[in-house]
Image (cartoon, rainbow, N blue to C red; front, side, top):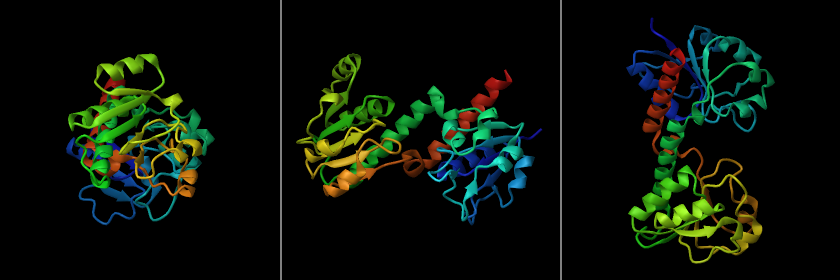
Length: 287
């Protein structure tokens, strides 16, 4: 029996994910995509009641926006995360990343079983690679010099930091990486990068580009006052980010806050990864 997938909101990644499900012989219904005028064989639903005809429900990354509405950048009208939605999806296979963000605005969602594809190690590793690739694309488009022999600092040595450092090293940049743990300092050195202690950053001088991957306030007003104004600052951390935006504005420092890069720079591949991850989870659940 053919399964029907309902995709509620999301950016271009989720349109490509829908295409991938179609190729695998699933039926696909889209909700919150009223701005899309051409969707091929994807069915755009104007009524939420169509959710009752789905077997699998997929929420986007992140599931809600700052106002508590479902994250639907392609919708003409806001889509509320409320008890009606929960009633329509009850009893279905629900895939929702960052569920805690949705629960803040819809307490009842806490009691509904769902699966978080965003926490899967296979997903996060591939997503980190795409994010790093997108960050590199930003650097190539925004920095007026060459990456070759440029002096670049990456704050944070997590999944994204590791991928980005390797890409930049392969392009012959001088790569510095800041971290907090002694084990990370050792790994940074072993990989041929130059380590710095994040907690001891008092000034950022002489760097062409700085990438922040740490979801904590690293670049406060004091550090920004001691940062070269001609340095390209790219914040890859999720909101509120790791750079004090208001302080940067008052100091006339330009920042690129690069959110959801896979959805902007590689939506096709990112959508394929989302679809493949969810299919794996469905197969594992059946077993």
